[in-house]
Length: 162
Ligand SMILES: [Zn+2]
Ligand SMILES: [Zn+2]
Image (cartoon, rainbow, N blue to C red; front, top):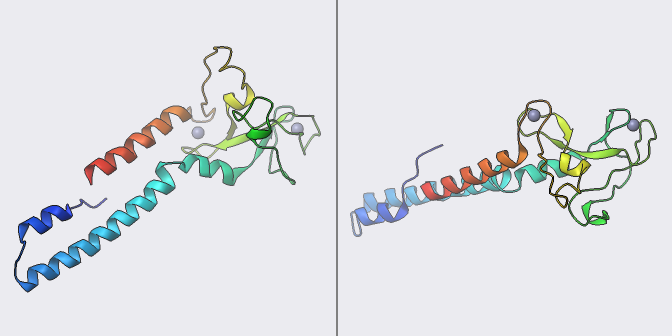
């Protein structure tokens, strides 16, 4: 990542200046604008809601009965249609083995790229019953909540450094 120069600092250095300097400042401002824009786009893409976006793109379900991973052929119910409110998308019937309501929406691990079922989707009542469960990738051990907190922290630090 390029180090950014504050536009205020650049202006303060030569409020009147000669033509050459002023032109340089325009170039600076232009470069800065591009950097800010790119940072913003990256922050939106990977920082806030980046993981969410990946989940929406994935839409793969994994069956508890047969262990198969599949992309549903038809529309699937979303979390809002769950009896438990908007906490977890309800399981659907498996398209591979036909088991009823045994396939859960998976999450693509942002670290290793494997698809896995979140514990909070499989066990949405845990939060109400005071059971501590974590959404951890079974393949690489990444803790989704920790990963998210880290991403938010990183994005905030980048904004502060600007
Ligand atoms: Zn199945
Ligand atoms: Zn993983």
